[in-house]
Image (cartoon, rainbow, N blue to C red; front, top):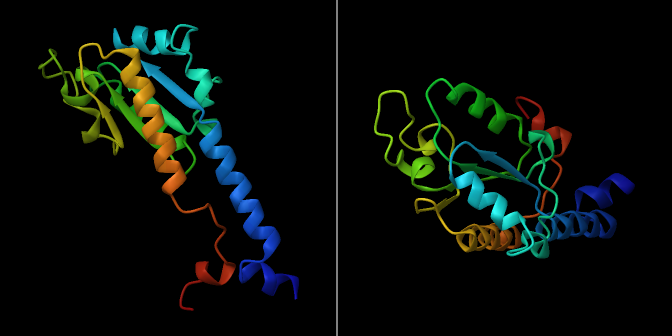
Amino acid sequence: MATEAYNGGGWIATKLEWLINWGRKRSPWPLPYGTACCGIEMMCALAAGYDMARFGAERPSFSPRQADVLIQAGTITLKMAPAFKRVYDQMAEPRCVISMGACACSGGVFRTYSTLQGIDKLVPVDIYIPGCPPRPEALLQALLMFIEKTEKSQPITHKKHSDLLVGT
């Protein structure tokens, strides 16, 4: 009887999903991955002058397993690409990637054989921030875009075990 209520979207399960999504959109945990001068602008956005904490992102997560948003700021070399991909793969779903700066978006001024020409060749990017380096206000706008995307997304739901069985 309790299982039927849960599978049918009972009151407790629905309220729990609403509470989880409310927490996700009110407190995004960014994972800063700064590799060049854009990292300085990212630190500036976290400081008191721009105060990213007013949008709930006051706790930068340095563990990919706890982060919601991966902020890549700077160049990625081909030697660093497998490590960056591993960090992305360790993040839990749902996740968001913000490509901050010209180097992260398209390679920027580093048009060489050893530099990845845009991180979208490695991982899917949700939000691009152009500029060399972009202003902290642009990062705050991208964070607000992430919060808006989270508000519009479907709630996190658990799959029924019967959906996971092969041949049913």
